Structure formats: structure tokens, C-alpha cells
Amino acid sequence: METIFANDKPYKTMKNIFLKRTNSNDPDFKLLVILLDNDLDKINGIIQLAYNQHNVIDFIETVLIAYVDGIPAGCGCFKKFNDDTVEIKRMFVKEDQRCQGIAGTLLTELEQWAKEKNYTHAVLETGKRHAEALHLYAKKGYTITENYEPYIGMEESVCMAKSL
Image 1 (cartoon, helix red, strand yellow):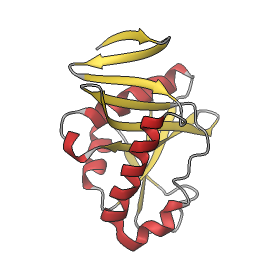
Image 2: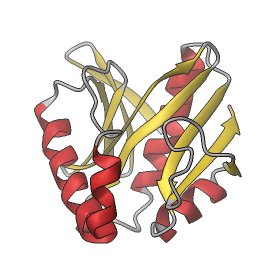
Image 3: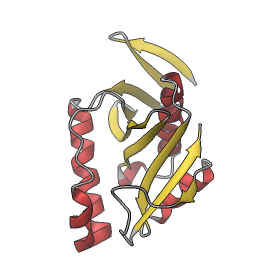
Image 4: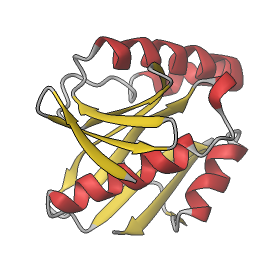
């Protein structure tokens, strides 16, 4: 992986995958989040209504976008959970770009960025219906933990944690 700089922002490349560190105002991130929300609606159906309130991101400075051949292909971000822990949020790869290592690359870079900010742990929430996500997170060293707020009592939630 090679780091290059464009417009004073670091990009990382892996084959034809380019990663851009940005924030939640980025128009490509906003587009990908719309696609993510549509995907979640299809997978989860009516139960997604209970989760939508937890997917709102006001402003976040730690957003990562993956580009393939210059086209936005996926995203993820993290926010402070507590003094030493971040919460991984809004992980998504467009359907036609899946199974190419993009999600794993995004997750690895988000973890690296969190470590650069002196965080030592990460948590995340996904759903029981998201087998691909559960597989990815387990492969990357995340283990299932008790549901944390606001997911306590939400039967479809699977919360996971990892030391960075």
C-alpha cells in the first residue's frame, strides 16, 4: 500500500482502490450513505425503522471513502465512543464492488486512523441478517460482546469489539 497526497489530504492506494480521508460533508459520502440506507431497508424490512434513529450522523471528521477507478465504491467512518474507544459506523460497499477486498481495506484503514488518534479499542453494531458483515468483522478480529447503548434489548443487533 502506498500513501500519496492530493489537495493536502492523504490517499492510500492498493491496486486500483484509492482511500480518501474526509468528513461527513463530502458529497461522495452522502451519496454512499443514501445507497447504504436503501440497502439496509431491503435487507431488514420493517425492522429497519427502529434502527434509523441510530444511523444519523450529524458531523463527523473521520470518514473514509474507497474509490475504484475514480468512482466512489464504499465508505466507513468512526466516532468517539469513550476516552479509549471508537465506534465504527456506516460501513458500506456498493453491491457491484463487493468481494474485492474493499470492506476489509476500509476497516483496516479506519482502525489505523483510530490508532493514530490514540484510541485502543473499537466497537461496532451490525445485524443478525448481515452474514457478510459478521464474517468480515470476525475475520478482522472482532468478537461478539454484549449489546451496548442504544442497542440493548434490540434482538436483531449484534455488537462486536476489538482491541486495536
